[in-house]
Image (cartoon, rainbow, N blue to C red; front, top):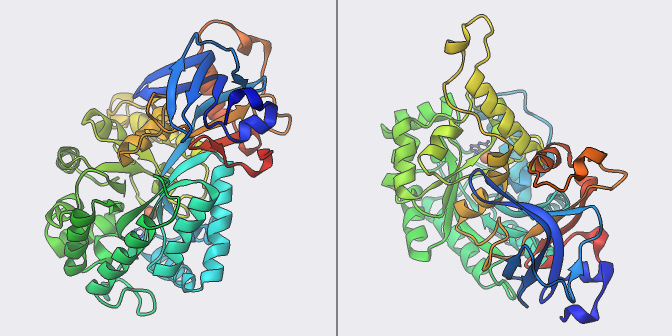
Length: 459
Ligand code: GUN
Ligand code: FE
């Protein structure tokens, strides 16, 4: 498409092959914010970023409307897609009861493909509308419904990594919701990998993921088989790691080691492997993960309900671990990465400061330095992209144009602009304001591969 032949809102539907005139922000590295003011971004015909210039030639460029601010799309590193059907409920019991009482019975219903399609469609629409352009999804044990989730992501244009959940251990999994054997779990996983890799027009949009639910729900044979399958296919891996006292202790008792050591033993701790929570990881577990190139999905809201501890985020970052945020729908009661990132900042401050006013200040907190909004912005965008080994999360040549536009002037939104916001000086405090005040109504455009996926803005 040539930029000369299109104008206005229509042009914003499909930016492939266009030159875009925009203002905005990205965080190409942890802690470094770069601001763009009337910059020029050029897209290739496949939605790849060809160049980004602060003082580029504006001739023939498509301008973003006044008041719109462009940032990279948000990455959700941990979503249980079926659990969207119980979002905001059932959080009054510990993890082990929540799984058996509410979650396994709910997920068992995804044997019904129509029900699955209804829930999955609503989730992907809602995530895109909130600005989540990439997501790492747990589906259920069911092969057809998992394949359906991948197809829905592809059709709606969410960059997605989708895994059939493997869970075969009769000790922890109910009879009506488990893989009948370890071999079944591995075969089903392979069937989904083959299906996703064979989807027509899937050019780096949807990926398969080897997905052992967590160590307690998988037999050793299952974990071993999945490790081999991941090595053979090169697929991504996801699971839960050291999430709660109960879970961490269960693995210690059964395997005689930590979760991280167990995953390493089964060939599951490696590059492109993302583990959720990690609140109970020891320093040596964090080292082991870093050495193996594994990443963490930090789920600060969910951890409040299930973990009994705050993830040692600063320690993970200091070790060079890739960390992104996860909503953990529905262990976290929102699909919004905005709320998740805000909680990530709050949790890190609580971890730093401690909670008990009666203790002297110097003994009250963990001693770990908090993160600020700059680091949270990186973690929510490029941090997640790096964890997945995908070229997303920053406006850099060679990356995909996965981006969102925030309309700061939207009357129905929650961003309010005052004269002092309009300073000409570089001003990353404006980004801080956006991180804290944006809501769904402010999100005016959501592009993956250069195509606007937001229904309300389609031509
Ligand atoms: N551990 C095993 N399964 C789950 C799940 O669905 N959610 C969370 N938060 N932890 C888990
Ligand atoms: Fe989870």
